[in-house]
Image 1: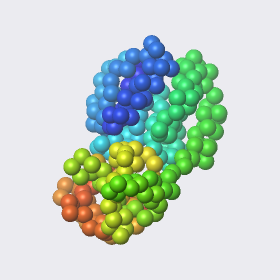
Image 2: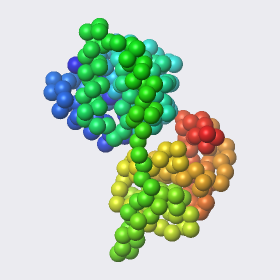
Image 3: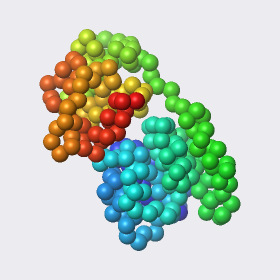
Length: 253
């Protein structure tokens, strides 16, 4: 089996590669790509890939944009922290849709589905039923409280009280609505996995914000957006052009 991974978070791609090699010792991972642009470039040329594992949120956009620019004639397994894309994934003929953090058994089931399809015995009605049920069956549960540190104490903090999290000098800082500052003992990526994406949004690589902390947004140059938060941040919070439409859709939902 020859695979391509499209994933912009290094830790996530390494974890997926590790699980794939555990389940399929003979697998050959041809490429690990991190953007819509690099994926389009790869699939625009002849290749030997037999399956692609495709993250939905990439550094320069949403991976569905890839299908608008190039044809992918091999099976696709989507990987994402968000379940609202299941039906759209079906429309581009994916064989499965795995929610992060990816569980080994679910990945094994997806590979089994791939092998079934490869031998021409795939049941499309069953596939459609699985994808249509994913929104309800694969619902993730998200943290309602976090254990965070302040000085020499640990404090249980309700997620509803969080205004935003950001990276400052390599350290993750959590600001409450009252502008108290705490220090989660996790990376921003790990925090993103634990927070409900209907309430919290990854604005850029440095900031995750609660929707109620967003006071307004304004247009910036080259299609970017500036987001104003409460309590205010010292640094300007910028959403890239690639993520701007998705962010506005999220805010309007």
